[in-house]
Amino acid sequence: MLTSGFTNTPTTKLLLFGLILTSILVSIRDSKHLFWIQVDPHIWRYRQAWRMLVWQICYGNATEVLFAGMVVYHLRVVERAWGTRKFASFILSTLPYTSFLPPLLLALFLRPLSFNTLNHLPSGPTPVIFALLAQYHATVPHSYKYLVATTSASPHTLLFSDKSYTYLLAAQLALSQLPGSAISAVVGWVVGYAWRGELLWPAGVGRWRVPVWVVGGEREGERFEGLRRRLGEDAARASGVDPGGANGGPVRRTLGTQILDQFRGAF
Image (cartoon, rainbow, N blue to C red; front, side, top):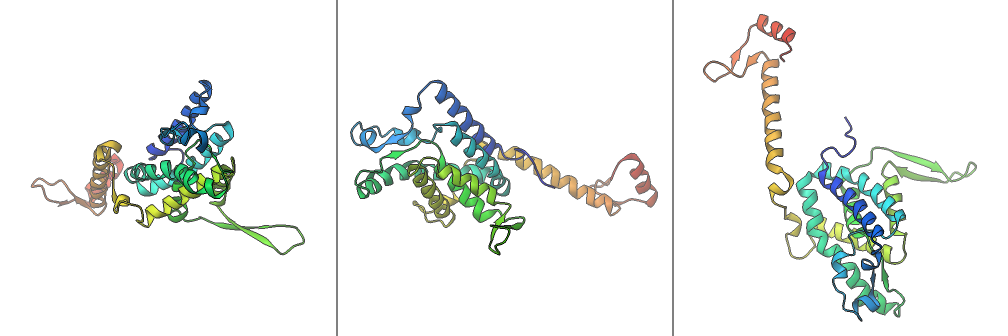
């Protein structure tokens, strides 16, 4: 059965609502200028290196917030497939790369190569989203594919899948403020696949996990242990064996007892 909403995805829920809330607060306080990066003057002239720590906190306009929110909502299936602990560990372990690589790449390489034409990096967690999108591309299989004819008379068709909608939303996000948004998207995608291939430095960063208590792992383990125990008892009763005998061992129930249990609601 398909799971809807934010069931079993607390990290995705926190990421989505945090993104929306911070973008609204920054807009209300009229402080958007503190988050986007201009290599010159912010980095070279004013030495505002702190911008590389905060530029992913929020987006600068409502359109980017809308598309980013829809993409993040679709990416919740990655957290369901991985589990909350691995999902949160991935975001935190790749955060230094997604935060520092785009502005450093722009300042040290792309801007000089473009004769100082490329200078602007828009705010927003686009690298984080595209790093997650890389895991979505590699982890989540498509459910179906379909063909779309380009014209009624032409035999040429385009192949899409149920995941294409997510990619189209992400493409809109990557093209929202060219070329800076595209730089962020490409870096995020590369970081995501580098993490997957264990190519990031230091070695073993992909195997790092947040402490269990951060994501409530102990309670989750107890819940699944209780579920596993109940399933074992149900299977034993279904086979006609009572797992709680007088001597602590299994006791086979009679046919009459099994029939009475069915009417009492016990399985």
